[in-house]
Length: 412
Ligand SMILES: Cc1ncc(COP(=O)(O)O)c(C=O)c1O
Image (cartoon, rainbow, N blue to C red):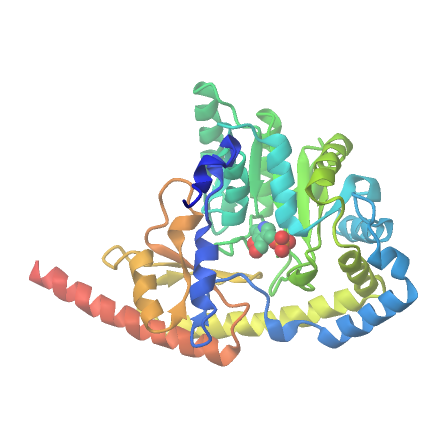
């Protein structure tokens, strides 16, 4: 008799459900599909030779550190170097209040584990990063959306939401935000909004969880000061990552925050994995210590800017005028909004998959059932010719759809 595994799963795993993005990977991995779905770095940008050379040196010259278990909080060298990078951005950060994680995703998981109680509301952006919401939900937290526009979360909406939750007797403790080149919308929170949001956080005793994997990939203008740099009350927890600026394959990120919090995260991490990959940490350190990473990031910004320009240019050229999209100043994502008379993003995705082009429809990014008429397009992974071709294919699909829907409208 087949075992009914659902009967065996612990009660607390009730909240762990599949992510829409993961289900799409299977579809988009088909070689004939041009995928704007995953937020993956461009494979062709991985510095393979530098990585190979560095690994050889690391293993031959310092195998004790690289091949052995390491401290749970991470290697001192990498923490020291990462803290220095954060100080250059204006944040007060010492190696002691920084812990290395298995990508920033592990930071999201560990923080949800130690900060979120079942049934507790957690403020998130609307729309928000799916992986962040999934982490919160998997510990029973309830993401509550704060509307955002191209300048980030709307402080007035945030305050209204906080007041409402207070009145309902379930005050929130946390606000999860991706302030730079947000996943999924590409929006960057303006400096004014950051100040206002910090002020709200201070008045209502909220902790801000700042997730910043895309900040270094800035194609125009300046990145505003981080919440952690602006904070005077030590109410900000910061997540950073080497995934987008180096490679995700090493799974190395970090979490910085006040000491008591970092100590608690470290205890939680001990049972999760003992320590992050020693080899991965050594590699991140080796490639950062002599300026290679900074030069690589400068090169990446040129290369991703070209991809972004290719996608924006193709969207301007091929999409019907009613399909709206933003031009992000950095990161990997463009947010597309379809006019009301179009099919939903989900339906459009089905049609586009028939033509071997993939994106992610907006519903999964919403905490409140919204996002029906929107989609996230990622320009980071496909090559430039494929970006242009894929958008062209979608452009003809959208024109057909528009023709059909206006015919329907006339017939009504
Ligand atoms: C906003 C955001 N946070 C966190 C992550 C996780 O990144 P990693 O665990 O590779 O550092 C991602 C990955 O796409 C992301 O977009």
